[in-house]
Structures are given as C-alpha cells and as structure tokens.
Length: 176
Image 1 (cartoon, rainbow, N blue to C red):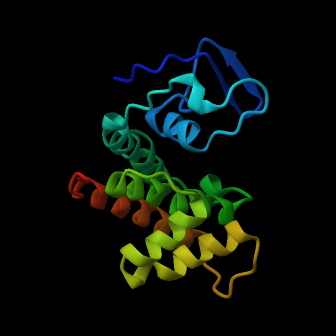
Image 2: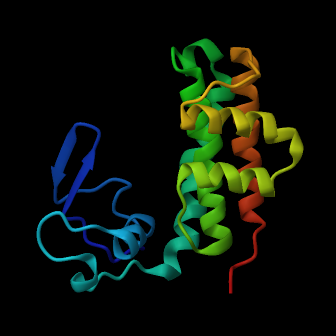
C-alpha cells in the first residue's frame, strides 16, 4: 500500500481535490521526483518526495492484472467495430505501447515513454509481433504505415500481444 497522500488529481477534464486516480502511484511519483519541472513554486528535489521504489514492481504487476488484462479481454470479447470505434490505430497504439512500458519498469525499475516502450518491445518480444509494434510506433510518431490490418485482425492481435506482455511480466526476475 502506498503512503503517497493524494492532494489533487487531474484526469482529462476532471480535477479533484483530496482524491486521486492512477496519477498518485509509485510510477507518477518516480517520474515527478526524477524529471519534474517546477512551473511555480519549489522544484521536486526540495519536496522530500518518497516514490516508494520498493512498490514500483508490485504496482506495475497489479496494473497489468487489474487494467491491461481486462482491457485486452474486452477487446477480444466485443466486436472490433464497437471496441475500436473510429480510432483503431489509436487503440492499437494504446495497448501495444502501454503494456510494454510496464513490462520495462518491472524489468529495470525505470519508467520510459510509450515510444521508447515500442522500441523496447521490438527488442524483447518475438518477431511475429514486430508488424503490430511498428504499426503502433508509426501511429505514435504520426507517420503512415505500409501494412493495413483489418479491424478484426487488429483487435485480435492487440489483445493477444497485451496478454503476452502481461504474462511475460509475471515471469521477470526482480531487478537487483
């Protein structure tokens, strides 16, 4: 259990005081402590932040189990037209770049960007996933991609990849 006290939270257009969602976590606190930029007031180094590095691995494993696995299962169970809606490439990028970010953090203790997570996934996961990962990276970078997936194929592959990433993360040794 994290000892980080939520002060305020911002998700999309919603701002909450004294409550927080996923933005108060060992991951967010680590990023703030290491890379936070003060806009007004003191810098992160003077705030005595404790990102609770000992919880980083378990928090990410729990996030894969409680968010990413159910997300992938819903994508598989629902019609690709309903789930991916009008943004199929965005949905692919969300899953294919999101889950490997957590895998990387579990493996190394470091937090990386979604683009870096795509590059990491190309290095770590089998070549059969490379066209999907390259598609996600192309979307994220705002460039066209040469391979077109059908909606059904895109949904199935995205789901299967996220589930494989989550399963592989469970097998990772504790960094040390």
